Every structure is written in C-alpha cells, then in structure tokens.
Image (cartoon, rainbow, N blue to C red):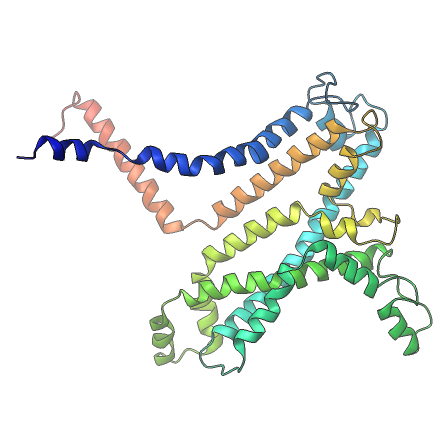
Length: 342
C-alpha cells in the first residue's frame, strides 16, 4: 500500500509550468497576428477617411468587387483591384510552375544513388543561398543589372554585341512580369528543392530495389513510386507557395526605377499598401485596404481548402464514410429495439 508521502508526490501536477513556458509565444502571437487580423476585419466595414469613420457595412466590398459602392470613382476602384488580383495570380502561377518543375528535377537528381555527382553538398548550398538574401537586396541587384537604358550592365552588353536599342526590362509590362517571375523562381527553388529532397529520402529504399528487380526503369520508378509518395510534401509546397504568392509584395513593389512604378506589377498586397498609405490620414483608404485584405484572406482559405480536399486520402475518406454509416445504422437498430442491443 502506498504511503501518504508517495500519494502526495503522485498528485503534484507540473502542467501549469508548461503553460507558463508557452504563454509568451501565444501572447506575442495574439498581439501581432490575431489582433491585427481582427482589426483589419473591423476596418473593412468602415469608411475610408480615418480610423474613426462611420460604419458603412459591405459598401467597401461592393465597391472594389463590383464597382457599385456609394463612393465616387467606384468603377475605377473596382478596375484597379481586379487588375491587381489578376497580376497577383499571374506572377504567382508564373513563378510556381517553373519553380516546382526545376526543384523536382534537381531533387530527384541529387537523391538518385545511381548518379555519382561529385560535390553534391556544394551545389545544394549554392542553390539554397538565394533564399537567405533579402528581397530588397535582390530587387536592387536586378534593377541595376537590367535597367532600361544602355548604361546598365545587361543592356550595355547587348548593345556592344550589336543590338540597336536597349530592352526595357523594368518598364515594359510584359518583360517586367517575366523578370519578377524569374527572380521569384531563382529565390525560392532552392528551398523547394530541399523540401522535396527530404520527402524523397523518406521513401523506403526497398521500394526502389524491388522496382529494379522487376525491371522498372528510372522514369517508371519516378511516376509510379516517387511522385505518388511525394504527394503530402507536394501539397505542403503548393499551399505554402500559394499563401506567399497571393501576399507577394516586396519584389513587385521594389522592381522599378525611381518613382516610375508600373501598374502591371501592382499585386493585391501593393494595392493594400497604397490605399493604407495614401497621402494624409484624411486621404488614406483604410476601408478599401481592409476589404482587400479580407478578400485575399478568403481566397487563400478557399483555395487551400480545395487543395486539401482534392488531394485527400481517398481510401481513408471512404473508410471514414463507411464507419459513419455503420454507426448510423447501429444507432437506428438500437432505436428500433427500444435502446437495447445484444
């Protein structure tokens, strides 16, 4: 029989100390993440001239989505927002597709035991390095390399090689989009490659050995073993890239010369920034900025949910559905038998 001292020792709970250790994180998270999100939601229902503006309901949403608000210039506001939304999707999709293809190719190459590539670690480090450089530094670098005039490095080389006129890498709407897509791909493909490599190395080598014994070539192994088993990490990459892409701000905003900002690079995040920091407090469009923030939040949540739903485990979902049907049938039989079951 346990003594009284042993009983007291067993009754001591240390859970409260765990809560004390994690409390600072949650306090900081609530202050810098949850409250700004709630306050943005509140601002989206207010007028545009100040934080103390009157409640206007859904007027900001109808203005920027349908151009039907009560404010002047509603049609122009709608056109600007939809253009920014289109630019956001174009820039994200245009850098995600080549990024995932290049990263997947390199990840398979670096993890293939048959490929005897010397210096794999060096190449991994070099390819990951752009990810640790700040976007402001990268934008400044590329603007000074690919400036529009003949005095910038790339145009100077091209004109010395015989080109008649300089290429407008910064101000041309199409070329500037391609440049931003390329820079984003260059920045992030190393990070994506490392994640995909970790996923590939988590696949059991016995599967590839069995495929070799059965006579499967590298292409068949990739499409029948590697790619299906990489689905969880691919979904994670897609969702995180989508969240980052729809919030893209730094490169599109900084990729310009002086004050000549191109509207063809205006993303939703840039649209929010311009409306929130437009002139004086009386001129700032806090309501439009808040509504645009909530709209892009809703779009991200919907697309993320659809992605998870489409890529869910079909077998697990079917088993869960069968289990629920069996429980429902059991409850129905119990109800018919007066609540008594054998």
